[in-house]
Every structure is written in C-alpha cells, then in structure tokens.
Length: 202
Image (cartoon, rainbow, N blue to C red; front, side):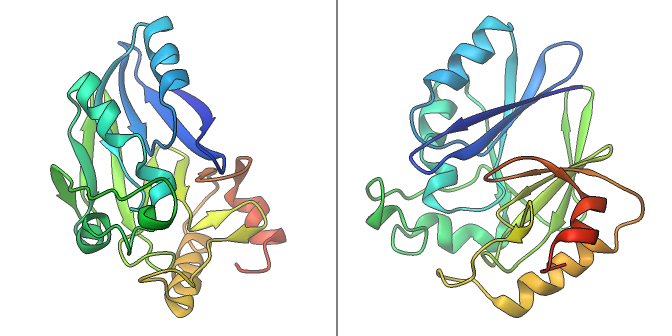
C-alpha cells in the first residue's frame, strides 16, 4: 500500500491517494485545481476506482465532479451527510468557490467496509465537525478528515457542527487500541499516540 498526500485548494486541503500494489487506488477528498492530482495518477499509472469523502464541506468536495468525470469513480459519503452535500448554504460552497450541490453514488455508515482493489477501508462515524463526518481506517492508518488535526480538532460553528459530538468522537479515537498514523484533512500527519499525549482536545 502506498499513501500520497497532495495539498490542494485555496486553504490547503489534504487530498490523499491510497493505492495497492496493482495501482488500484482510492482518492480521499479533493478540492481546488485537480491538475496535481491528475499528474500524480498519470505519472504513476494508477487506476482510481473510488472517491471517499470524509465530509461535505466545500474545501473537501470542490474538485469531486471533475475527478469523477475524468475517471468514472463513484463517490462514497456518509448517509448522514446527504443534506449538507446537497445544500450550497450548508456545505459553505455558496460563500466560497461557488454553489455546489453534490450527491454520493454510495452512502456508507458505521462499520461498512469499502473494498478498493486489494485494500479495505472501514468506515468510522465521527460526527461533530459535521453531522456526517467519518474517518476511514485501513491497517494502522486513520484518514481523519476535519475531526482530528495535529494538536487540534475541527471547528463546530458551521452548519450541523456540534461541540459535544466532536469531543465524543475524539474520545472514541483516543480509546482505539494500539497506535495509528493519522492523516488529517489539513496540516501535517501525526500519530494517535502523540495526540493522546499532546492534544488538549483528546
């Protein structure tokens, strides 16, 4: 398995490409100009088959339609994010890049397994930043979206955000057994053990 981080979009959203040994890959979140993503995929002869969304804010979905059109990938998102994805006011695109209304091709929920080539992602519902925020777990890696950052956590003052829920979600992540590499929606990667010791919100 290979994990590539591409920082794209106006506010530095992390777009992740996770590929198996045969080049089959999933794309997690994508905003802004997707050309760096396209170049990486083409230079490495990858075959995208899934777009996995951690949540539906504009800075994580801005390039989804372009990427989907180019590769024909179905979009996966939490069922609880359906209303936010569809409403430009709720997903904040109305105030940022321009009105975007999006629907997933496949709605997922807690415990679902998403098979991508030889890889399998497990869906972990972690509401708080939005009602339908999720993390994707694979091996000892967590793609945490805007739930958990290095030394911080996602804001809860936007539509469907809830402070009590994000604290409960962070506690849930803290209590996972063992250690994980954490790949957040913004900023550098970290580990769960570091965040257990250093992050005041955990």
